[in-house]
Image (cartoon, rainbow, N blue to C red; front, side, top):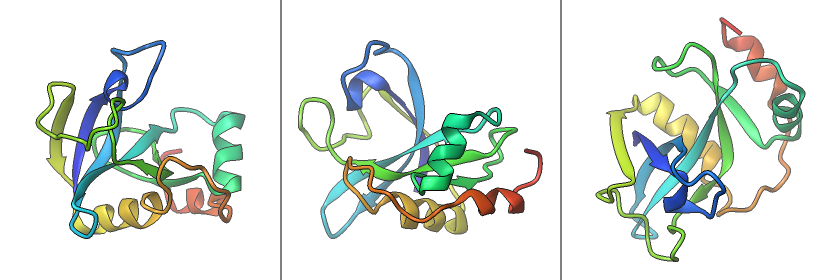
Length: 134
């Protein structure tokens, strides 16, 4: 699994098409497709993110690239905005470093549950206690 920066316009319609988000990208051999699991930065303790953690939509992880914890969303993208399979060689996708096996497993296990659907899971608020610097 690789950490990647992907422009909004590549994966979904957005009023900010040039904005970039971080994703965990991996190749699913069974489905024969690349999957992108969205990551979100937990910059501050805002209510929106805490609700998402409590309802099980996010799971926190610490990545060395960022000072604050990162939230793993519980869904993935497998198609671009045009309905084609994700192409990691597209100009709107920038691959960064390879993630450690432990981090890759954590992101994949949580994020590969639902294709684009946010379905309520169990609360992940207690996992924040295990992450320092927040």
